[in-house]
Length: 282
Image 1 (spheres, rainbow, N blue to C red):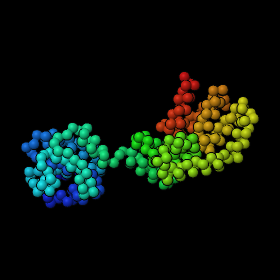
Image 2: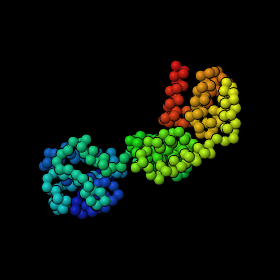
Image 3: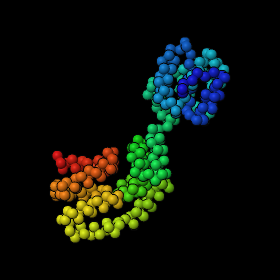
Image 4: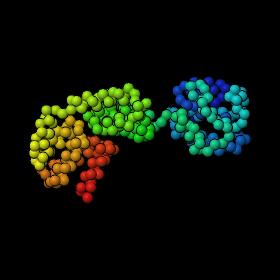
């Protein structure tokens, strides 16, 4: 339970010691105080939403006058935030819920931090396809923080999705370019230099000489997809579908939808080409 009643005997444990592991919100209250009667249930409600990240330490200021004196409490209610053994914020008197939450948001872990942690675990295991949707989610929820953008670009590059990687890297300002950014840029350049297997190069050459041969175009699209050049593969399959919807018993549309399913519903590239396919169909 992250809501505790604190006395002089357990204050060290529940306030000071606990604050080195989690944020502690100390509430000095009294039975006779009308504002306390409103504030205490509100603080309890908020604390219940953060069972692992916040402790609400309630202190009856009348019964624990020594503690109230040690903390410099002059009126109730008084609320203090304790982190690493030191007060970091607080307020006196009743406060509206939005203002209390705004104060707490400065110190509580962000939701995207846990998502980023999960993504990093996948990256450590080289499970880039599993890491990517989590990185995109963390990037969006963090309002496009540059270090997350660089990490997402690195993951895209590992998956040979170089266009997406470059689109993220180009928006990272000079002052925000860290070691991950430099690693991602270097990986993109290496991937570009080594891009294209002999099979891909031959199919690309054959297609250039025979642009109307849909069989060659289809084979090239499959090879592009196999080498993680998904955008080029999708564009080519879409073109085949435009030119001949019945080609090879609908093979182009099936391959296209299979790639979209593999990318995942939340993938921006999948969303883009799902819309393009929908426009063609309807």
